[in-house]
Length: 425
Image 1: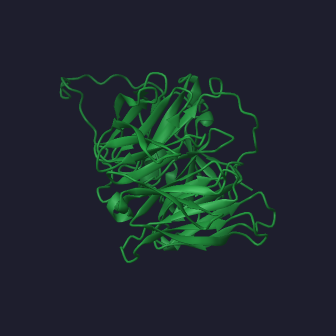
Image 2: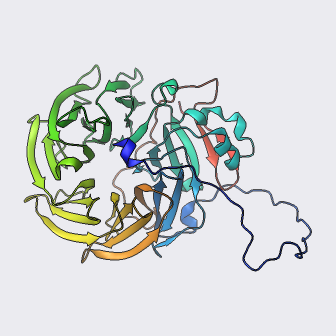
Image 3: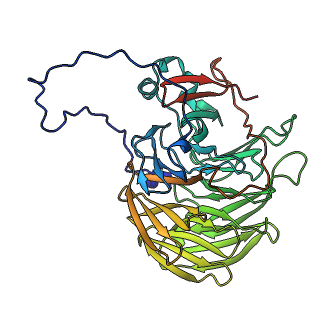
């Protein structure tokens, strides 16, 4: 539940400090050197040959970056909108998408010299970061009515990169944006809830699964919505509403294009549902409260976190049995797989850390410090070291609602401190 998940969140304070051992009253002030002109943003991969992992710090509205080769933190953080949620990589590119609330004028002013004129960022709900353009933050869309204060918590991107779906936990909405269809028939605002939370496309993009995590506990049991996204010419339609237990949270899509597995935190189980059978296809009982879940891509295993036990699990998809366990930090939340290096990355909300688990023997390899209350995590391989792609699609095009006459798509360049404009049409 959003109120529980982010109960500890607060605004980050930026305090200036005097370096240890320096006496400010006696230190001579050096002559000021003329400021060097800011050069163009440089690709992140120039400094990180294997790639990087991004972590969303919901408690301080930043992204942390970690080097995949050295397993060390990259100095500095990237400022985002308020309470960034999960992170997903565009299937055909290295662009990373994440939901977040607005960025305040004060926050914008700290990031750009002319932040006060960038009103469009005050109503942000879908954001992106592109390592190829030097970690510039871009607003990719205003989903929902800004006056309703959208509470965007999860985003999912279809495998062809042409659609995005965002869950709005407080307003009981899911927003779908389609730019592949000139008539935009599948642009939709779907009522789903109470409390739409985790969300996932099937691999072929036909179905969307939504975990309805009732924030007020009035629904018993909670349920999962299944939508047919492509099977109707007029847009998405509800296929089934399946009761699964108490507090369904995060969802992983199965490779069969019709099944989904959802963590049901309040019932200590993982439940499989199917858009074909319109019902439950299996339940995996666990000895703790599951939260995060991802698939391994082959359908052989699923990885999940037990937030109350401080563990990451590897689960056999055929038997539903836990085959391996690894200790993590406190309250493990979300996961990312780096199959190229054989690692599992786990964010730990309870102690502001990140656990890197070796898939070989399924033991913790390293613990890294993050920002406050880490949630989403995603691994981004350097294109020169990543496995070859069979197909490269067009960039994702997400409809953006104009706001107060502002440009429809803008970016803050963190390195240069300038604001770029790039209309998404």
